[in-house]
Image (cartoon, rainbow, N blue to C red; front, side, top):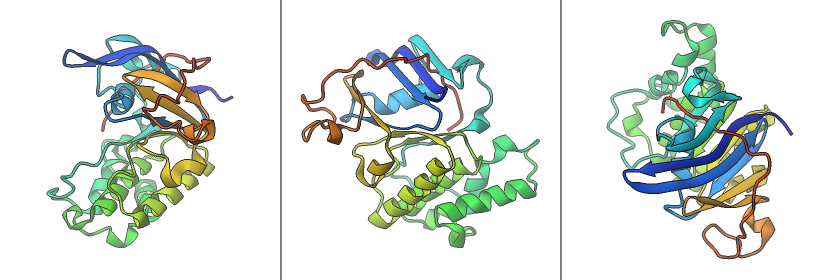
Amino acid sequence: MGEPVIAMREVTAELGSRPVLRGIDLTVRRGEVVALLGANGSGKSTAVRSVIGQVPVSAGEVELFGTPRRRFRDWSRIGYVPQRTTAAGGVPATVTEIVSSGRLSRTRFGVFRRADRTAVHRALELVGMANRAKDSVDALSGGQHQRVLIARALAAEPELLIMDEPMAGVDLASQEVLAHTLQEQVAAGTTVLLVLHELGPLEPLIDRAVVLRDGCVVHDGPPPKAVGQHALPGHDHVHPHAPSGAGPIRTGLLS
């Protein structure tokens, strides 16, 4: 097993006064592709947002690359793709400008060099959007907009890629492009944590599934389909499992 890239131990988090995470343990090791599954409201998105520091942790420990999140500063090692909102348009920027913003953490004082421009172009090619580079993001479909968000994360050439519902509301053609893109990243050694409602076309890439229910881990192991026909997120057929070797997970970053 590789070294822990993400480690969460007994992490508790609240939104307002409502407990959302109830002492979860989760470890993602270098080179793994881990799917975080669960019904709506189970705490999946809160978990990944606590990893990157968007949601404060009220108890427990979070580490990134072996460093407590509060001390972690090397955010260029992490690419984050948030949930795509329905407000895909209305941004006065081109596709290239949006994707280039993901490269800023790699630049010196925001000055783009040849390597930065090459990385941005490659990210656009990976998601099949190089031909739309000069277009306004306001003119894109939902699936194309999602591709741009993923290209923005890939532009920094991250070691760890965290994606929150990357397939939600995306057409089949874009799903296939995104699955192929992720396959290339995994082949290159990128560690991936995905929040998914269902595995879909990404299923062949998943090494491990972690199922949340009511803010607790109820399964950590093979994807539920391999555990049993009805072992889907939120179903009683998913049996609790105590993951071993979970370390502290830490968070904090830009969206």
